[in-house]
Length: 314
Ligand SMILES: NC(=O)c1ccc[n+]([C@@H]2O[C@H](COP(=O)([O-])OP(=O)(O)OC[C@H]3O[C@@H](n4cnc5c(N)ncnc54)[C@H](O)[C@@H]3O)[C@@H](O)[C@H]2O)c1
Image 1 (cartoon, helix red, strand yellow):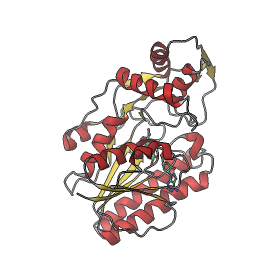
Image 2 (cartoon, protein in one colour):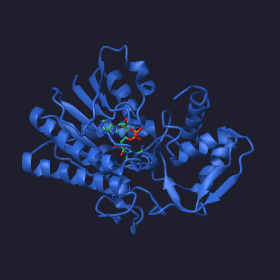
Image 3 (tube, rainbow, N blue to C red):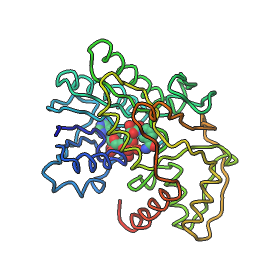
Image 4 (tube, protein in one colour):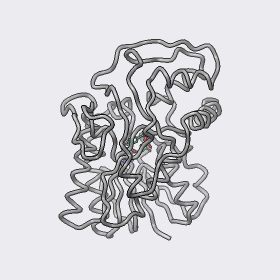
């Protein structure tokens, strides 16, 4: 059994990861500054003596003793990461430096939650890990995209220079219970709007595509990646390759929720990618993993969650 640090552990993905690690008998230290995370996401763990919570900002150094680090701390949705873009870059870059420093001192294995945003608005479709991306370095999304790219650079430099055991996963859109209801990500947006009977906002003509991975599938591959052979560093794409247009997604949500919401079209935000789909051949080959939860089932579970979550204060 390991001592595992999860940064961003009170967030959407981090809280599911903490649940999984505690259920496997590990001692879990959850570190979060609660910028987008919430105590509600981890309340089921607070009385478990294998779980410890620390309020801490990863832009500051951290001195603890651990065997494994999952570095997830970073706001993930545009509304949140654009709220304080300088802090977003600091969280990715200083956060990576601090967590890599900790891994170096403790010789812990460390996994970085990177993102499909490192591919920017891709000219190659679907995106394999070998594609270097097309990212605007000075736009409103750059604090996140370039911060994550720089974090990847740091991980690989610590690996080359200090022989750290690194693992880099590039996460494509993931959804499920505990997503923040107001973070503007498309799945939660559509579901919350439909449940409130409001119009569903479609940016552009709705023909842009995304692929959506259910959270349980993602947590499974996190754990597999952490346990993979030491010479397998990634980067490895993780996500669900099933592609949907935004119009198709809106129709599925409306079918599940019912109600009378209509579609409301708005202009496309700057640098919004037109297509996004992971090539997951490497994850299949190296980790024996592919997503199992169909979109209909994942959406059903997420709608159920929001039906009850919307009745409680955040
Ligand atoms: N959910 C996705 O679809 C997706 C896609 C690509 C990448 N990712 C990455 O996965 C990670 C988790 O994403 P999520 O969807 O759970 O987002 P989230 O916003 O729910 O979780 C991020 C967590 O990090 C915490 N945090 C932010 N800044 C911090 C700081 N400076 N110090 C300590 N804690 C801090 C937040 O309070 C929150 O609990 C992020 O790094 C994100 O970039 C997520």
